[in-house]
Image (cartoon, rainbow, N blue to C red; front, side, top):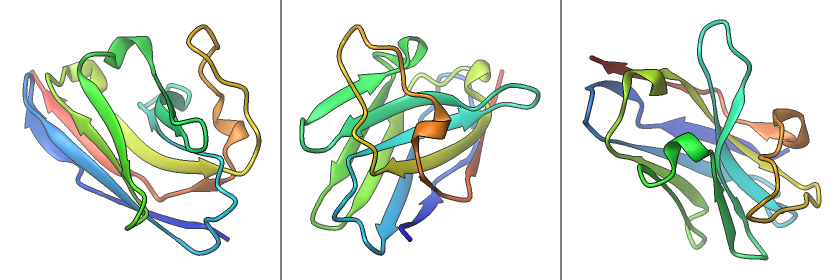
Length: 130
């Protein structure tokens, strides 16, 4: 079982920045994609950003394009999410996730749903004050 541990959440004012980290351990050789999801109170968990590892393809939720940057240190097996120009609507619990499923991808493809990912971290709270 892949283990994912997030860190880096916190409270920040609108316009500020945070960097989330996710350390992956365990049998990660079969990982096909890694990503970040978020869930605000009363809302469904939504895809934020993802990396399709073998394809080196990166996808973002439209509302975070130009503000968030996903990256991965493959040697250390750490996934990052740099979040700049944060807005109050970015407030949510952010989850790191990985999947061994061979998901389709592409610029025009819809973001993958949460149920396509089979390993999850415990989540880290991000709160953006106005």
